[in-house]
Structure formats: C-alpha cells, structure tokens
Length: 218
Image (cartoon, rainbow, N blue to C red; front, side):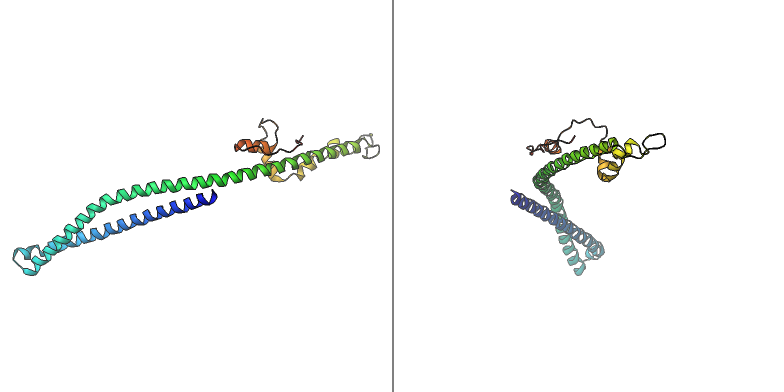
C-alpha cells in the first residue's frame, strides 16, 4: 500500500509538471505570435503607399506581411482556445495530485498515531511508577516527622522546620521538568476523567485501544 501510494504521488506530480510545461509553451507561443502580428502590421504600414504606386518590392512585402499577419491571427485564435483547456487540465491534475498526497499522508499519519498511542502506554507505566515512588517519598517524610528527635525544635518545643518543608512537595515540584509543568498548567481546569493516556490517545485517533498499563497513577 505504501509503495502504491508513493508511486501514485509521483505519477500525479509528473502529470502536473507536464501540464505546467504545456501552459508555459502556449504562453511562449502567444508571445511569439503577438510579435509576428505586430511586425506584419508594421511592414504593411511601411509599404502601403509604395504598393499603391505599383512598387514591386512593396507589393511583395505587403503580400508576405498579409500572409504572416493572417497566420499570426489564426495562431492567436487557436491559442486562446488551447490555453483555457490546458489550464482546466492542469486544475484536474493538481486536484488528483492533492488527493494522492492526502491519501499517502493519511497512511503515514496512521502509523504515527499508533506510535503515539504506544508511547502513551509507556508514559502510563512511567506515571504509575512515579506515583508509587511519590507515595513512598511521602511515607518516608511522615515517618521522619513522627520520629522523636529527628527534627530540630525551637525554644518553644515546636519544629524548627515546617511540616510542609519536611514532606518536600516544593522540592518535588522543582524537580518536575518545565515542559511537564507547563503542560499540566495549560489544562489545570480540565475536568476530563482519569484514564490511561494510551486509552485516551487511541480513542482520540479512532484507533484500536492499545493494552493499557495495569496500574493507574494516583
């Protein structure tokens, strides 16, 4: 399928190029015919008086100019018919080429979508492991707080270090990559229900759901 679509893209692009060259050729012929027409008119104007006075050379020049003028006018008339027809063919070719590129793009995008869902499954596992480690981190912090003599106290018998500082949430946040913090902030008020990323990614792209991580993040 991939090779077939790539060949289709190549073939349709070649047809577009052919029609573009044809149109360029017609436009060149237009220019040539217009120059020939203008030149023939100049020759007739230059020799009109002498020809009425039976100047042989002038008569011959006018006869030749008339023939050239007629040929140029007929050529221009034909080209005026040919150019719109060629432009219509180009439009059709461009439409076919665009369709071929879109079909190939859909195929390539489908591969990328599946890869993204697969990466989502890996992220689910990382998130689940991060959640587990965070719970352990918090449990250790609580044990330290409740451990007699572990936290220095002030003269009033109160902890010299705050409860929040011991638990270390600010330090955890400082350790979170900036891109992740920004991503989470951008959807801070999104009320989408908690689901594995692999599942939601597959659903978004209308893919067959990949195997989700067995453990969800807390």
